[in-house]
Image: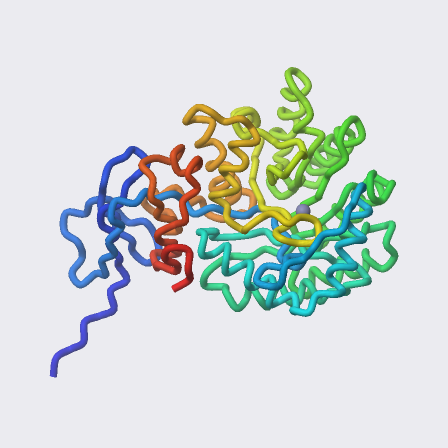
Length: 400
Ligand SMILES: [Zn+2]
């Protein structure tokens, strides 16, 4: 009786275009990049023909709101809104009327993101008395059902205010025990009107639970700068370098020249990460200006087809394009910097191992029809294949 061949954990991707334009064979072993152009492909290994497609490190969505999304459901008509408060109230009204459960809508959006190459996402999920912890529980369930396809971190996000919405602080604490990984915050001055009060709470909770912190900060101008400066000070004092993120940070995006240099130096020194979503008319953080100054920058979708916005599609290659367009990227270096922020910036922000397509890296990459990274950022191709730990999990925009 013949002995069955042992399972081969090796996969050879043939005709892969690398960043320098060369066409090479790429060997993956046990989920990691093993070698390029191996002299002898291992006997019996699986072969996948990349057909000359360009390999890019898989993108990361560093800021998304799956609980709010209508993805996969009927079209939602948005109400006019003039202020952040109008948007927040419109969001609550819309969500209480949604027929589909959170897990279904969030899961549909995750599937879309996975099929477009996203290897990991940081999901900000509303925690408020009106919603309780149902969003956290259901987004966790949707993520658990896809744990072999995507890494999902959940931020307990006080969308309606933290100190200004009684009952939220207790729920935030509970959320960390029931599926949330990260402590969220929201405009300590603009929403709560109490910078030290909100920061005392979120830094305290993050410290007690050993959790990272990720604060939405729309506040611009001097109030925004004051909060960013205080967050940086507290980050260093709490020994949380690399574990504190400020989302949007419009106040940083508004700065130029020496003012930008000195704030960038402060953020880099404190190890505070920033996230931009390159949204509509909002100020956008420019990777070509910030990353050379040592500031860690990730990129996210923010809301996708929710009560806040009809836009967004969970595609982080398309988001790199939007970031490049909004920051007026023109040179190859500027275009590449936008994708670097999406892929490497996002991975660092989420604490994931980098996937630079070098030997030893996780084999998490996308294959796209483009000759170079700058061309891919401009063309926004749908990945012909999405590869996670060496396994093809999507082809031509569809999960396999
Ligand atoms: Zn957000």
